[in-house]
Length: 574
Image (cartoon, rainbow, N blue to C red; front, side, top):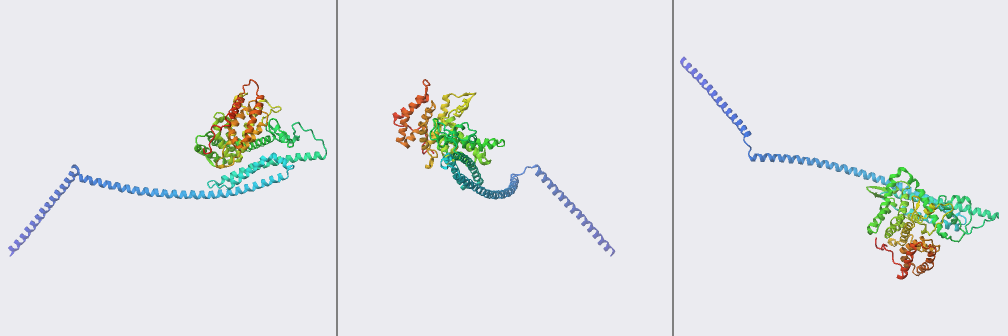
């Protein structure tokens, strides 16, 4: 029994030992396998590092990289689109804000323009009422008003221009028309003041004469020219700064005399004196603007706005001429015009528009001396511009005529006499001669310049306004001028020079307009007047202008008429 138990225990011990050994063997096997797997894994990793990748793997990685780049690009595009949208929204908001601000500003300007136009209209009505009262109170009214008729006509023209400006609505710049209306009222105010002063002087003279008649005081004898005496106070006040003041005053105040002077017709002298007085007054009104040093830059820009288109006027084409007219018209209307890269407006400062108007009138007339005497055909495009602007701006037209008369008094016609105490230099300058180094220019040069001015003036007279409008200074003035010239005794050289130039340009048009009447006048020139010209031409002087006139008249008789001037623009040119 005991033996049996011993055997059982021994068997259990052996079995346990066997089981334990097996477990050890199993563990060793597992460890060995794990080591092999780990070794194999590391071997594979090493091979992967050392052995190049297969092409399929490279393609996969490139595809992955490309997809990542595309994803980043789409994301960036979305961000850019969002930023652009925000900028557009901001820009729209700013634009709406600016438009709203501009609209409100425009509304304020419209209201301000309406207010200022209303004030200008009221002031103009008051001025016209005051003028009417002064005219009504004028003594010997019918006789006196003839002497100020030109000024009254100018007031009427300014009134008509005022109505056009007031009714004109400029939606871009409503204040522009208000400023122009104020400038016109200022001109009317100056004219009314001058006319009232003239009426006051006239009433004082008439009252003094009436008082002298009542007291039966003897009247002083009339001078041989039929000039009525005037008081010393009136003499001192009239034409104080005019170099021809004394002569103008004598003839202007001789309302009861009917004799014409040998150097000018009395009615022509009245017109000449009034125009020169208006020109001096206009220049005085712009003196503050012209002399202000702070406005030097503005004046320079305005000068370029005038001179550039004036110097470019030519008969190159109708479109070219229209462009120059549009630029000058826009300037006189007070609109902004291009000067290089800048924009400039004549109404930027009070007096600027008047400054430009007078400068333009002066420079266009000066083209007769500077350009037409060199290139006679240049007279016609310049005359066309003058005529078109004269139609739209009557004040500009009167300034042009005043500058023509100042530049060349023979266009009145007026042979200025030398005044007592007047130096030779001052006298020759009043006739239009130029001085250089104290020496007067040569006679041929002077005659050529004056001929250029006469040619330009004659070209204005025959210029055909477009759209069948009535000419503001047309052929009727050519007839008046020629008749007045033939009623004066001719002078050496100058009469023949201006007569041949005037007939060359205006003769053909006058012949068509006046027919037989003009032929009678031409016959008078060929016979009696040409003989008078020969009689005043010194023998042996050469007589260049006289020879030209003789050849012109001979050719006209031979051809049976006067040919149209070379270079005249056709009615359809533009």
